[in-house]
Length: 212
Ligand code: B12
Image 1 (tube, rainbow, N blue to C red):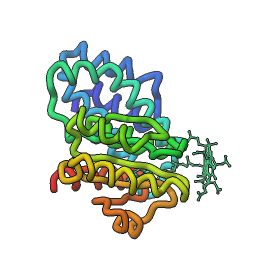
Image 2: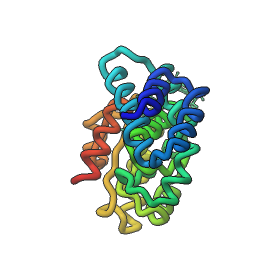
Image 3: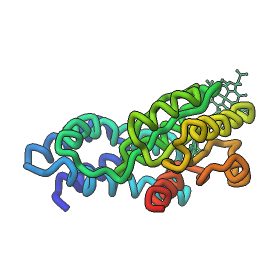
Image 4: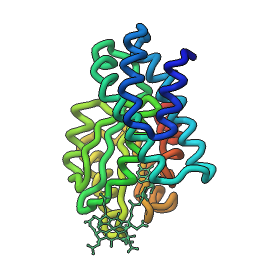
């Protein structure tokens, strides 16, 4: 790995969003391909963060800082990646379901998945089932990811699955769900394809879902 990419990975791990844009620009100036900067700089950094989060060595605020540091770099890389038509790991449409305004966990999942190379369409929060349907049509996403933090809004996940079914899109996408009150049992009950308890596990799940 080039020295600049090693520094970039380290800046992601440290959540140093003041450093990541400069290091990204430096890597570009050194002639490195945007996809190489993503794959060999940002992704190893985020993978380390995912591991540390999983093992309890890093906590939510630090992961958020790391994700923001990565985002600051992605702001520079994204247009270049699109221009070179770099093959991403897959497309994910993500949102917090209708009636629910909690988006911190959803943002973490989105940022970690982006760090793992997925192309993310983030619909934000309080997302109507019809908006999920439109977004799948617009993007041809392989995965729909839904977040809910309220027991009262968990049902919106089921409504969204129904809306995808009614639009004839259910077989085209894998659906993953999460959020504090959501369980594997609930995911099975509403016919989702997967559940993950945290952002690191969500990234692993997305990789599995996109393959099968
Ligand atoms: C922050 C917060 C708020 C903020 C939200 C700000 C924001 N921008 O998100 C504000 C102040 C707006 C808020 C409002 C309300 N809140 Co609130 N809120 C919380 C709080 C304290 C933290 C949630 C959080 O961000 N956790 C940190 C993140 C990182 O964790 P996470 O969301 O669980 O996400 C992780 C995993 O679940 C998973 N994940 C999440 N999404 C997804 C998606 C997929 C696909 C996958 C695979 C995984 C995954 O990965 C994430 C990262 O590891 C919780 C209490 C708690 N400790 O959970 C209450 C809590 C969720 N809120 C609650 C309530 C009741 C409300 C209000 C109704 C309060 C009121 N009376 O107005 C309103 C509802 C507004 C609405 N319509 O949504 C209750 C819910 C009770 C229930 N069981 O339904 C809680 C549990 C507090 C409590 N103990 O009573 N809240």
